[in-house]
Length: 386
Image (cartoon, rainbow, N blue to C red):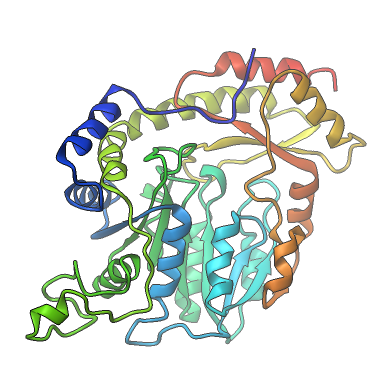
């Protein structure tokens, strides 16, 4: 039996949507992207959604937007608190915009920010906290929001791995001033490549749209608060107001997204059934620490951390999985502090003990939007005699 890390979620509806875009001969961001953005915002109960060509690009323009706010913008050298474990492009835009990163340890059981360590890390210089719900599992947003409100700190939510998760009945990816999602192939819904930023702030919404699209004024709201329109239409058509990028999605990505969004609820239901089976099998297995659910996880994958108190060699475990054709990988991107790229960062570390345990002792196997309980049984049997 083969147990894959990921699988396609596309069917005939998506193929037909692609054909319709090709027949229209309109490939650059247009009506399909706009429709997907509108539906996405409504689905998650937010005012505005801006689609980009990846979740990484969504993080980039979301970070940039906070530097161009009229009131109290971020500036180079500002302190931002981040977890030690996330994907690389959670961190890179922060570094690229000159922010000083303060790394805080994770809770070994949830894999999210340790809120006790987070509270201790906050200083009068802290301008922003980046909350990352790891692999579908919500952060403790009640505690994080309280800290942000008490200290006048911006909350940025990277929700690229956790679409559809909920904390206290509210979707993750809706708690921050700006929030990001990914629609990459292996994620909860897929547009092949893609990502979105969500916000309720009209200024940030228009900043995101300009930054995504060359930094020009085209596509701005009639009452956009980020610039004043001039009378010269010839110049206005190519007027640049921000140092932006070209990270636009294509119409095909938007068309696929419309189809996929309709399937998200069903995908999540199946993922959660798979997760229930996984947890029931491994919850009492002292050899492995599995992710403890906070709120309502959307269960991107199944993490397993070899108990550091036991003398079990991870290499032997991974070889066992490889021999059984069970695909596996590092948890998210591992501890970013253990990657070569960290030499380019302006940063300090508060603590990384648990992040290191997850980095050196952990791995994950895939979850899917179809019934994989037989594959989970196969995983359990494969690991039974280690």
